[in-house]
Image (tube, rainbow, N blue to C red; front, side, top):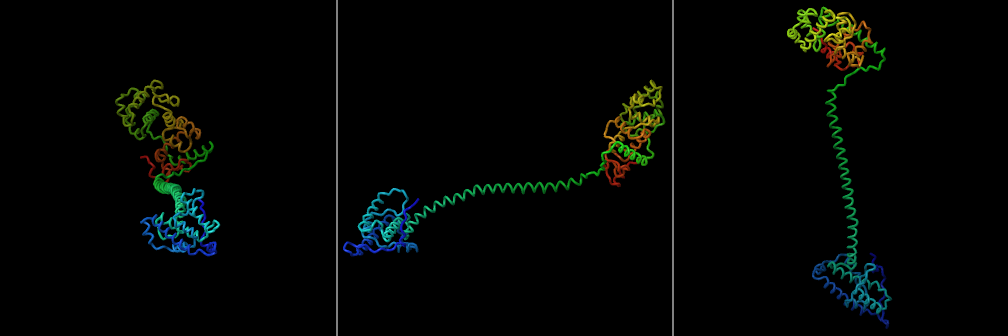
Length: 461
């Protein structure tokens, strides 16, 4: 709030003392009034402060109090000092702008104006008079309010101003900058930084640096990527050339390839082929000598005792079904073909227990009629070699038949069966010991190391 400004006593130049109507100075009267006013003001200040202010008044005054004390002894008019001594008081030098004056202040102001008029002053008190009033008022106000003695009038006024100017900046400038940055910026930056840096530095390094190095070295050595030979997309002519080249190499590798079932007649070969289902040729060859001796022709099979035949066929597995097939086969041959085995495919497939595979085996090995036998070994190899993707035996038979001359069909079947039984096994092929590896697109499914692959090669006994 704006306050009325008090003239600086140090800057005001001292004026001559006022003269009476006769031209004589009034020095003596002023001194007496001054002394009387000072004593009255001090007495009033002590009574207002009470006993708590007396010990403080005994304290030595500081340098500011001494300077103010020196400034507080100016000259003043007789009637002004008398008015102050009478206890009329003086309005505060500084007050808030627009504030209404109190009754005490109004009375003091009237007394001051009367004293000024008596002195012949034009309404402006001299600097020395103002200093005296300010000093006394400041001393009284300071002693009465704060109870602190020995403080100069200027210090008393400054103390009041200091209160107002100290509290406002404290709340405005201290609380606002302290709370706002503390709560808003500190929490925001702390949480954001904590979450960002904690998650980024905790989760990312944990997953990236911990899991990756742990899993990679563990799984990589166990799962070795097989080295495969990629065969470019080829035309039918290119496929034919590659398939025949592989067949020539297999012919050189297995020059003695043949049917591994023991037989002496088309009937014995037909019976042995029926028994070879779900068993090995070696097992069949161990049973057939006894069987062939007891049942030499078709009529013997037609009139065989079921229980006796089952005992013989039991080692081959599925012996009841196989016994039933052999008895019916003998009856069919006797009834339709005079006990002889027919030499045509369409007639063979009509016989009980006889399919295309069995018929091709009989035709190719007993009658010299070329035929492709698509058993489990042949079907597996032609798919590994990339000759076809078909799984149906009849379709495979026709597709492979288009790649090779008809005269090679029977021996091609023997060579593929030989290679499948000795090297190109179903579970673990011996790729490192395969003679046709350079043309095989499935190279690498098995061990490629020659020493390891050599151990997988099976030699028939």
